Image (cartoon, rainbow, N blue to C red; front, side, top):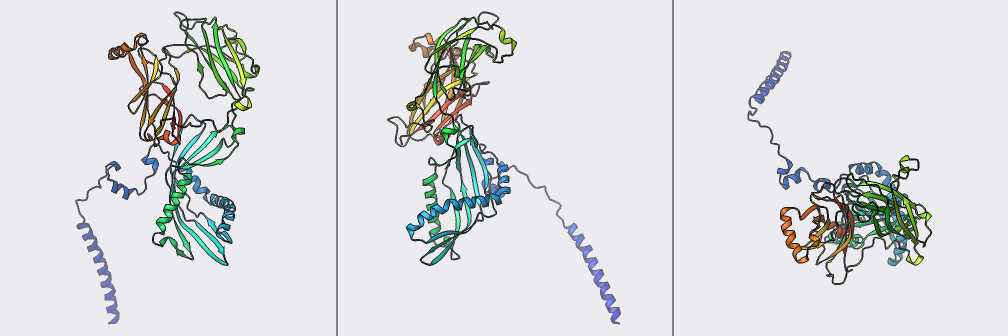
Length: 554
């Protein structure tokens, strides 16, 4: 009887389990909701700020700010190299700290201070993005956004009066926005002479501090006090415009300094060959020193003249008279299209005797290839006068003065400063009716104008304007516009010129814009000096070179 009961029990259990599974599956399917809808997909731009913060707790700077570049490759490099960088950085830190500690501990009657352990942990810092400034100066400016939430283990043992105390730093967090400037750039490895580091804002530093195993930061009021002290001390030392300068190379050896001045006088040209099918050519001369990044000097245009006389003088800074040469290129000016090259020649400076003027008549060549048979063709001649004057020891410019920003002139407000705008030159500017360019500079309602240059697509002004302001123009913009005015306007009396301009501008022929640019002045205030070429808006290929300086009283 017991056997039969056992068999019936197992059979009932099996049948019950099977029936339960079938009934459960049926109920699960039967009671499934039939009104299930697909989830609504919405763009991120339609989300509110709170939703975005929940979805994306930390948005990188290269996403929020287009002027920050993405640097994932740098983070990946640091991640792989971190175990080795950790050891190298800790070793260097110990070497730097030892003499400083040895100098300071006698003042506090401490016997010794030593590192018991020093490691930066396994978590490397990350760069959220990097901003790079491009200037025409010999420098490279970078602003990386640094965030480091690390797990370092720094234990320092201090001994005094036979007692020993161990202080441990843990859970370190550092958020900083440094500016790293490599300047000047030189043709010697590592290609820069000095590193300048400054902080663009006060850093965020958070850490835990343990003494005898207890967390000191849990003491009421101590955490905020330490935070403020660190921010103030770091700001006093390194907050912009203060910098930490690290000299890498001797600039006097790495950078070739000016050693003299070359006086060039372009006298005339003779027997030029015409390039235009109808009429004579419109020649002008461009001259520059080789191995120099400065723009070429240009003479005026002599219209319809194959034997032009200029008698125009230029000065050029010489850095290496043994390798440099002065280059002359004669062009035929064209109002529309590319200017035709009429010929060229080069004079090595080593052929000149210092402090002795030399008049030379040079044959114009197609190029400086001695094996080119086309150089045998007559293209005319050019007459120049050259004088090389080396600097005396007392006249030698020093490296520290190069590119320095002067102080503001008298009358500048104490809390403000002086904005200096220097208009150097423009390139490839062209008008529909005429090309007699000049520049309009507008800032805070004030307007300044350069001189007019007639019939020139590559004008050069080198004119300077100054604006005094009550406070730094961090959020302001400077409007620079290249315009052209009919040459007839210049013949009118000043009293009637504005009236004539008004009538002619209505017809679209008296005045026209050749392009403009709006320059943000925040970077100028931060860098103190910027010299850049800007592409002109509403111009096909036009560019303008503008140098800006922010000068203060202090």
